[in-house]
Structures are given as structure tokens and as C-alpha cells.
Length: 162
Image 1 (cartoon, rainbow, N blue to C red):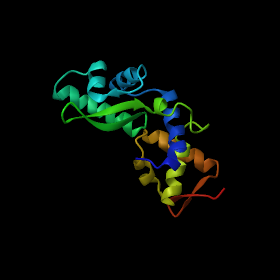
Image 2: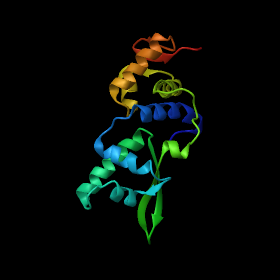
Image 3: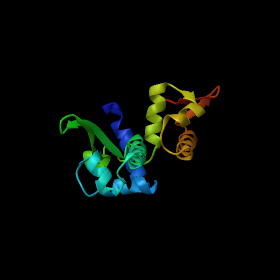
């Protein structure tokens, strides 16, 4: 759940991540299927992406979906179908928001927005806030600090007024 005011910052991070690619094969299979459709029920998505039936296939699928959702690449909303069967409707962020919400790309605007909202935090805490790889978040912090947008005050990262 992200407040609407932060969508532009998240959009920069998500579209930057989408351009960057990467990810595990399981995640890539899901993204490949969703790239061909507008949205899809998760039970159908699991089958089309080639995850085996049964609990093992479901666990692997759910882990991959969880990662993609935590990166913002896939949006899901729960629905109730077929006499109380719980599934979700999944779609790519870029399908939901066809026009970019930000001209920026990369995780920096998202990290900056989080620091502004927090009012400052120890670096180790900031590195735990995001699903992005730790190095990517750390690189964003280094760039923001080198640009004078953030700084350290007693071991705490703070946003400098612009």
C-alpha cells in the first residue's frame, strides 16, 4: 500500500527496475505472461507461467509473485470467484499506469521520498526498508549524498532542504 502522493517516486523506481531487467527465472516467466495480457487471475497465471500443480508449484509461484509485488512490478488485488474461491487479479505496473508518472528513473526518488517521510533514519534501517537489492539501495544513498540531497547527522541519514 502506497499513498497516491508517492506514486511518482515509486513509478521512477519500478520503471527503472523494469528497464534493468534481471530477476529469477520464475519471476521472468510470470512477467513474460503478464506482458502479453492486460490482467490475469493468479490461478490462471500460475498455469500459463508453467508452475507445476500441487503445493510445491504453488509455493514457488507465491514466492516469485511476492517478490515481484514487493518490487512494485506486479500489482495484485484480491477477488472472490467461483463460489468462494480466493484468487487475485494480477497486472503489470506499466499496464496499470500506461503513461509514466515521473520522468525520473531509478530508486533514488523512492529512497528520497521514504527518507522525507521518516524524517531521517540510520543507514542500516534504510537498507532494510526496500525489496531492492541492498547494493542498489546503498548506491542510491551514496548518489543522493554526493549530490548534497541527504547527509549524516550523528549516524542518522537526513534530507537536506533544497
